[in-house]
Amino acid sequence: MSYQLKQIYCRPWTLNGLSLKLIESHYENNYGGAMRRLNALTEELAATDFEKAPGHVINGLKREELIALNSTLLHELYFACLGGEGHITPGMSAALARDFGSYQKWKAQFRGMACALGGGSGWVLLSYVPRDGRLINQYASDHSQGIAGAIPILAIDMYEHAYHIDFGANAPAYVDTFFRNLDWSAVEGRLEDATQVAPPRPLIQKEFGDLPGLGVEEVREMMREGKPVQLVDARPRHFVSRQQDIADGATWRDPERVQEWMGELSKTDPVIVYCAYGFHVGCKTAITLRDAGFDASYMKVGHSGWRAAGAPTKMFK
Ligand SMILES: [Fe+2]
Image (cartoon, rainbow, N blue to C red; front, top):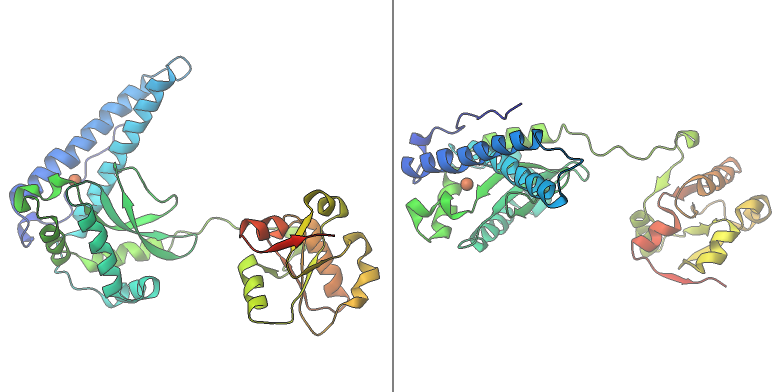
């Protein structure tokens, strides 16, 4: 199955300050060239015996396939960014203000990144990351550095073939011309589509129902704010003796003997329980405390997550 060429998305004769010669050369030689390479590689890969081919042959073909495929995808996105009049839409202005402070701050960052590639090569992309529901400017060299799971919605090509015919080595003039031709309503449409993509599926522990779980960041924020948090380390005894450290601010309690120590806790202040990794022990202990009338929740990431976040620990005696 071969990849199909797409029509150039923008109307080249309507562009302001980007010549037909430049755009035609870019579409035919660079986009078309990547597509031709991609199809040749696809055929070669189909004929490759992956059980017998040497590693360097497999690596080479798959690396070139990645570069060629990403080059076609990014060029299609690039041409789809052009053809507008450069006027930011209210929706994009709000999205950029949320994630960068303001449209101007975003533009300064994106423009700076693009100009920094002048004389070099690469892409600058504005991408949406479903995991966090936010936009980020990223740099991509060799057509192949993409944030895993992110969706690029705006791309500027900073390879010299994208501007040399019209601008020589004057990369900043090209970047400013690109901004003048940006089709922001198309960018906004792509953002709308990108936000429909679901974030990675969360870990669900069905057996614990809707037990409230907190992230390590939330717990630390509560402690920083001076809230009267009762942080309980409920790792099984053998975990504690093996690891020898405990979250600063936590008290270790044996999860096997919860009935014995729960009376020492306050019922008015929140109790946050954690175990080794955030699975059964912490959840069960938190449920036992909730059933006994405590305002208890569990810290989802456990002791391991506390350490992974670089939060302070102390020696456990
Ligand atoms: Fe290009």
